[in-house]
Amino acid sequence: MEFYSGIKDSGNVAYTREEVFSILESMGVSKATVSFSGGHDEGGSDQIVLQKFEEKVEIQEHIFPYEVDEDDNMLYDEEEIDLSGGGTRTVRRPRERELTQEEKDEMKLAQALSAPVYDQYSSFAGEFSVSGDVVWEAEGRNVSMDGQESVESYQDIGKEL
Image (cartoon, rainbow, N blue to C red; front, top):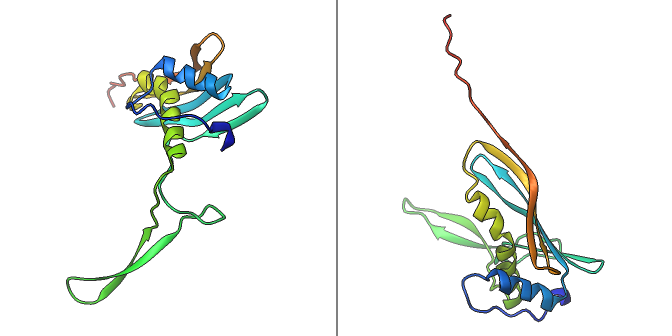
């Protein structure tokens, strides 16, 4: 995608905060918003949107290395395998493909933008629900998290019956 062109992977495992802001600035992105939700042992980023003037582009934290058709349906290869008790069975396997460098770079940036969510909520384990946004503002190099969190509490119900 032209919007994302020109970003090169630094080769590090993760980008630092300063590297993220440098990348956003080099792309001309004024704001990146990571919407997230979760709780009760699952959660994560739901959507990551980069904003450049009036243009908005969604990027993906996970891009799967499988071939798809023009309708975005996964393509499969079929293979006959021999069964140990005799006979054969047809197995369908997704048709794999190599990720492009642009896709790898996109995921790495998306994961760096999502890092504050996982720093705050880790695996989302616990008796709570949360939803919100992490906003990266290129001007001023500010990162903020806003949202709502509810925590379940339990009360003893001991009574004679």
